[in-house]
Image (cartoon, rainbow, N blue to C red):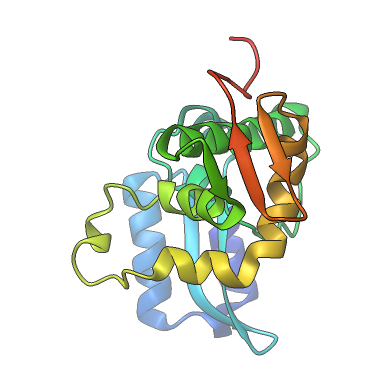
Length: 188
């Protein structure tokens, strides 16, 4: 329950929230009956971080159905999961989300492409159709996410690429080739 979690966190860490921010966030969460909460630009150990809180059922639905690509899109990029629920359905949905992201990216790429091309396409999925990318957002945002995190993307997607029989993954050269029609997400 994100509202209950946020209320408890607000009491425990009130110094991390401005008065206005805490009141507005709780009001918005309560009125909208929000399924998730995201706190951005938090200073933690000399870094700016953002964190999110979401109910497991809503998270699984978004990971599998890409209802709005909010949570699913963020989890297609390398993230640090601090506390992981041991729910088998959640773990399966997380894996399926990554496989679906690879499949979607393959549909938009030529037969041969670089790892950077693939990871840029994947990282850009959640920004497709986002109005902020047209007005005001840095056009290089996606590349700024991918370039410094190539090793993390390789770690996140390496096994999916290695296990796909339709993909020739040349990890040492950082290139891939896709042959024929494929579906790495498995049988329907």
